[in-house]
Length: 364
Length: 113
Image (cartoon, rainbow over all chains, first blue to last red):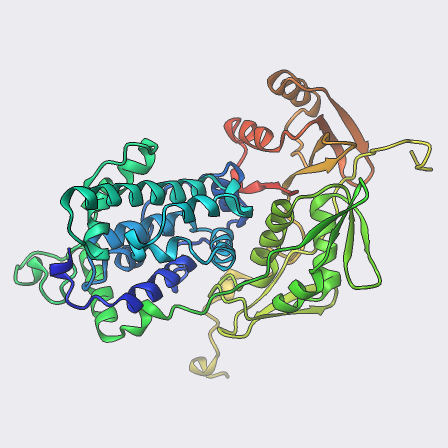
């Protein structure tokens, strides 16, 4: 692999990985703005594992396969990450993960130098309940072990790239099959991407749309390399800090911080959270939110993600740089970066079932 | 006498008012809302609101109860109309059930944590 990567540069690679975590197509072509986002979310996070949908757009395929300087295994890795974090939620999660666990996936290159205990330790962290996450760390551990054994046998040093190449060749025994077969199927979809060298260029036949589209993206990326790397800056939000107050209340400590980060009124966020979670609560003296009911960080995070998808990110350009204004009782969200403007659904508390004692409730 | 050429021609004349059809911009569409509510301990309650008229809520409730092995009831609400209440977190199951029965998936909204 290393031989065909004259342009390989560790820093470039790292940057690229980060960019992959967005999983946001700059054209926004993969997300249908008309469908409500939570559907996607549920398919990825609710049961813990992501649904592999394959590359949806040509652009994405290019993003995965298109780095001429890097080998196919990169594309594979990217692909997986991309799938995992296709939804907006997913990439937030990823973000947070990265922030919390500095020695995680991004350090793939460090290879054998990383002690196997490190990924194992990271499994204990908050987000370990994500199945995907666990798998990846497991895989990494297995990979490290494998590499280590290999090293013992062959007794020669390998650079990081060769090791990654080995990952593809060796079937990982300890892993689930779904993980194992992923890289192989993906390898076949790799597109030859040398600009101007398409075999059909010389022929007389009618060019297919796919071919032309592909050519367009090749040339686009060839002339603007920045497009691949700078699809936007990351949108990070601190993970919600939850404390239990007594037995029945949960304190959401950094709600104001998060609202500030999202540029939204805390009232709006809180109203949404209460409506979504079907509960009530209040803000205490130090700006913390006291929620009735027991909630876990994961659950609050889920709700916040939905809020972000619904009320923070621009549906057109996916930029979080938006303003929410109220005009004639309707909230409008205008995007600062692309100028689009749309109305957002009002927050509505639905039917609230009667829980608890009836005597407390006068109407019931 | 009028000059025909100078009349302004509106190419969208027969399209009507673009916002006329969707006068309820910003209001809730006819979504089916599936919500969850916490009860005491780790018990929960699932509510199904906004069921289209063509479905018989009573029969649906019976099917739900049998399928999900949980109890449930039909609640009349002056705002929401008929609401199906089920014991436990049945949100995903309800959604799957409805989709299998031919309800459009994007008309179902699952709320909650």
